[in-house]
Length: 364
Ligand SMILES: [Zn+2]
Image (cartoon, rainbow, N blue to C red):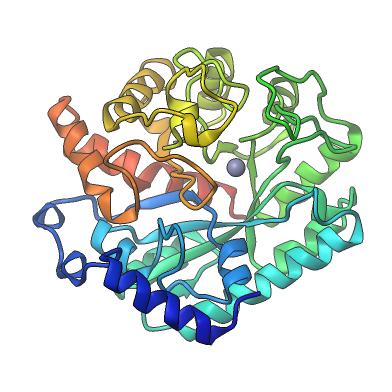
């Protein structure tokens, strides 16, 4: 745990090193034209903020998202992941740590209430945007804190969780994951059990969106079948373009479309471009904005324009595509799509309207 004093020192050092440029806050000409709603369906800063005793207004190591960067990038709805590392917290401890992280981010949102607003519905998000604030939605990434109990969904619904990514790495008793902890590029076979189906039913009742990023192909197929509401892949890409177990094969994209769901395109180089250097992420070559556009384009041909969004995965230990290093750079993606012939209406859908529609469709 780092004390607030050392954080201040760190911020001064970063300022001196030029990591933070006040110029970045002055707004970019790209902001003059851009989507009105920009909804990033997956960012992962909470664990890191808690470890550094920092907040979303602070500068901290890596720093791919913060309030200033969201404002510069025109981002105004963000789905923040509550992720509990299952290697560190097992059983009841996973539940307790999820509570700690929710408390922590709630407190930080209260501290920054002039800029941030904790939201539970599509209407609340839009109301926050109208006031010029950034709407924060909470999502649980990995079902470990549910402790295998459908009743636990009720608790997390009360705490404001609006989506649950059923797994992270490694199977749970009730649902299969796409990967082992060591990230071996092998698709895992486990599906979803009766308990898993019951958990999905509870999520549907509470308007909590079923998120299938990280989930095995078989479990995702069964979950979309079981869910009465549209599901999402909050941060995954097209398997056909980049055959990685974290990505989604064509038939699943079609199934997602038929139930009205959305996939959020992930900016992590490893999920964008097939790479041989996957042992150490540091050796992984960066993908480009064009690779992100390639995935968007491909998903459009399979699932259609109404089923694509963005789920950057910033702060999720990723190597971002070049040009999309942090949230302030997002307008570059809209410009790349314009160059590719996408209309403003198409870009509005990808930037946020599609995810907003799914959030609303899940509400009772
Ligand atoms: Zn993830």
